[in-house]
Length: 144
Image 1: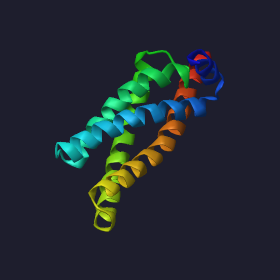
Image 2 (image 1 turned 180 degrees about the horizontal axis):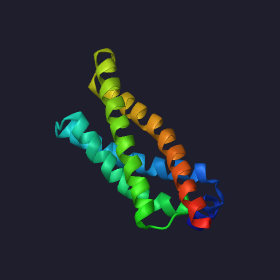
Image 3 (image 1 turned 30 degrees about the horizontal axis):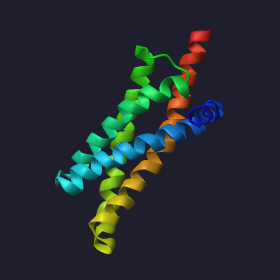
């Protein structure tokens, strides 16, 4: 069964692989943020930063080779982690804003889930297309 799933995964187009990796990482990221913010009362922005960092380390190790077909070299790392900083700033702004706007309407736990969801979707697409563009530039320069 596991072998069949791996074979199907390998046949997916890059965007679908990126989505699958992102979903896996999102579960880990959200669990870290939930535990830190909801259970340990860590500031939401700090908790989100910790969750996103943990997630991005895992994401980089999985997506660089499988989605963008880049080796784990310095150029690929600079692209990935510089876009990560942009994504982190965007995600923190979104989660803080969405939580503030919704907490009075639905309570802490649902506001958290709503805000975290919002902070995942926007950066997901922004980072995929930005990374695809930047990695494409690097590949074109290497081939010239």
